[in-house]
Length: 443
Image (cartoon, rainbow, N blue to C red):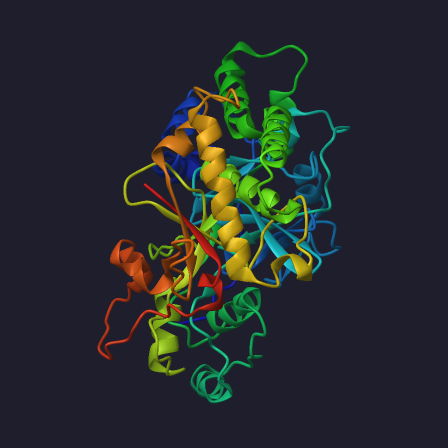
């Protein structure tokens, strides 16, 4: 199998209409009604797994040598630069597989949004004026998931030597879970990797933007403009009401203080983050193997057959939790993805104790919600508390606070033990560091 090479195509709408219909029929049907001439160019870019589509908000494109370079690079044609610099994020969407918006702060990777195929992006930035509150240098967008990792430890030098000899790549042993992504990316870049996994991303050129933002709206384009505004409105729902959410949380913190419940600011902040993930505003983690986040099944096979892993290679990837049956979401105190604060070492020195305290806080929060003391009836947060189970997990049995043993998780979540063939009778890695102080959301 040949190595996946980035690919750049300049297209008209008729060349890509069928693909857009497959992933977003509503948008495609609206565009089909427009009378489009040749100026309404679109660009379809194929990115290999792990490629940074945006790196600190700068768009990367393949040049004539098939190298990914910044849009401003001298090897990118001037007409392409002109067509894709109307905003820092031009309007686009994935035509195949997922993208992850993430930030890197103080050596922490923070997943912010997972964009599945057919989901428009760059809409907020294009509808807002160029001078806005949007901070442009704090995030990246990767092809596939950036935050993926494997639950069992994969730090044996001999295993990596076998992969290097078999696939002809150079690998460094990962020190932390978030370092595993670089290992997976390097393996996927091998000429001997069995699949050329990639995302295809479609970008709309400047002519589309100019038409959409004309002072006098063309009636023929009103349906597309309305669609984009509805999309932006839906995507921004939680964040438009974040001030009210923060005020509600301050009210809850006041109640906690008045009842002398033992907790610190980190515990409160973590519970707030869990609720935010529970309503789908921020990603949590889960074991999924439809390969939309990356070539996960192929990576599993390599770590069983070549590396020689003695446990099931459970791969966790970020996703947005939804209130649907058989849905699971996980968060670990050992891999914090908090946006608003960073835990201090002394705050998490005893992970089991911190897990107990967050569990107690959650029980108090649930009580206040049910009693209507926080005035959040008829909101997604209210539904979350009434429909979603929060299980507090540790690798050790804890009879004091009734923490769930991590070894029991696969009894309900069968994705944790999924592999296509288990000829070696491999077991679930319940002692993973990720599971030591973990919270599970489920229906």
